[in-house]
Length: 428
Figure 1 (cartoon, rainbow, N blue to C red):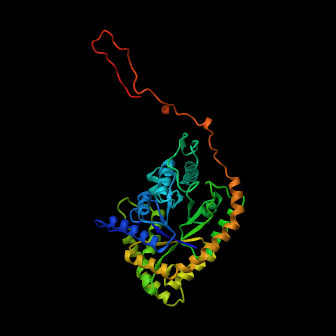
Figure 2: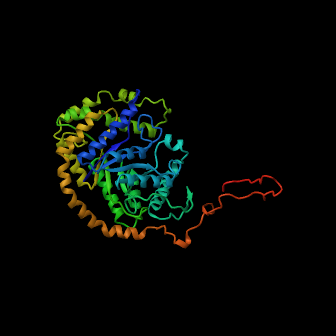
C-alpha cells in the first residue's frame, strides 16, 4: 500500500492579512516533510471561486514549487480541470510535460470536470455535458504528450490542427492517468477508461470493497477501453488523518477540521452561495454544537476507532481494513478547516515512525503479484483501444503561415525619376 497527502488549501473565514500566504507556504513545508519521511504522493486539487473550501486554483504553480524543493515524492494533479473552457488541452499537455521534466519524472495526471455551479457557471460549462467534455479532452491530452507531431482533432467540444505539442514528458508515453471518483458510477467510468480511480469520498472499508470489486472487475473485462496509451490500474481512497499517542488529543486536533470539509463541500454543491460573501465556518460552528466532545465520549467506549483519527494502533487497523478491501493507496486529508500546521507535521512524523514501515515492507511482493495478475488483462485492453495513428512524414500537413517568406517585399516599383527611391517595407 502507498500513502499520499492531499491539499484543497482550505481557508475558513474570517480572513486576515497574510493568511493566504501562510496557508500556501505551510502546505509546501508539509510536502517537503512528507517527502523526507518517505510518503509516496502529494496530491493537489484544482478548484475555482470556492471561497472557504479551496484556494487551489493554480495547482500547476504550486506543484512546480513543490518539485523544486522535493526529491522523491510523486506530484499529483488530483485533479486538473481538463475541460477546454477551464484549460485548453494543449496548454494542459504542455504544463504536465514541463512539470514532469522539472520533477525528473514524478508527475501523476488526474482528470476532472468540476461539480459546483460556481465553477461550471463561471466558465459557461453545461453540467449535463461536463463528463463527456472532460473525457474527450483527457484522451487528446494523452495523445498530445505521446505523439510527435499531434495529428490534430475535430471533436464535439474542441478542435485543433496538427501541431507538435512540446515539450514531451520524461515518463513515456505520458504520466499515469487518474480520474476523480465520488460514487460507484464514476468508479465504473474510471475503470472503463483504463485510468486510476481517485476516490474522493469518505467511505468505510465495506463500501471500499464494493468499489474495488467493481473497478477491477471492469479492468478485467471487455468494457475497459483505455483513453491513455497505458492502463493505470489503481484505486486511491481519501481518508481523514490526525494521529497522536492519546486518542482524545488526536480527535481534538483533527475532527473539527475534517467535519468542516464535508460541511463546506455539501454547502457548495447543494446550495447557492453569494460570491465573496460566505460564512461557512460561522454557519458550521453554529450547527455542530459540542460535536467534538461527543466524538471523544464515543471513542472512550470503543476498543479501536477506524476513521483515520486516533492512535497509531487505530490507524494500523484502519489501513489494514482498506488494504484487505483492495485499496492500493490511502491519501490523507490533513489540511482541512482550521487544523494547525504543527499538529499536521507531528501526525506525519508519528505515522512515518510507527505505522508506515510495516506496510512499506510488504509493498514489493504485493505489487509484483498484482502486476502479474493484471498483465494479460491490460494487454487485452490496449488492443481494444481506439488508437490515434501517428502521421507519416509525407502526411504531415504544411501550415501556409509556417512557410519561409521573404523578409521584405515592395508594394510599388522604385521611382527612377525620384531623387529618393520610395519603398514600403512591410514584414511578412
